[in-house]
Length: 86
Image 1 (tube, rainbow, N blue to C red):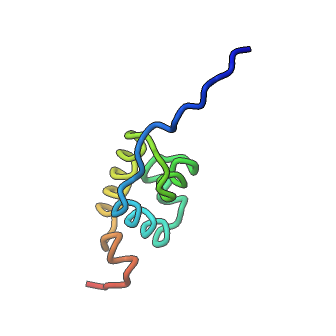
Image 2 (spheres, rainbow, N blue to C red):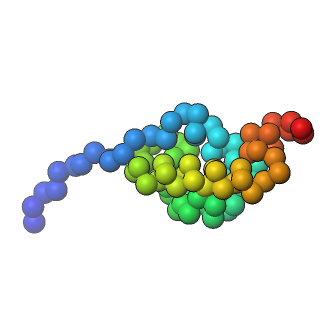
């Protein structure tokens, strides 16, 4: 059996500002709501939050999911987390 060479993970980490928004959304709404809104697996969510490389499709799903949460809420995700009641 041939030895398989180690390949590097493909993709890039989620940008820090988006990781922060994602973490805030998880704290405010809970993991199940974020997984459903973004259509992510728990593994993909964990990798994104940890700053590990993720595929471009995962980044797109995170962005889309955060957008859905903002558009379906009376309060923006950031305001709901900070407690700012405008």
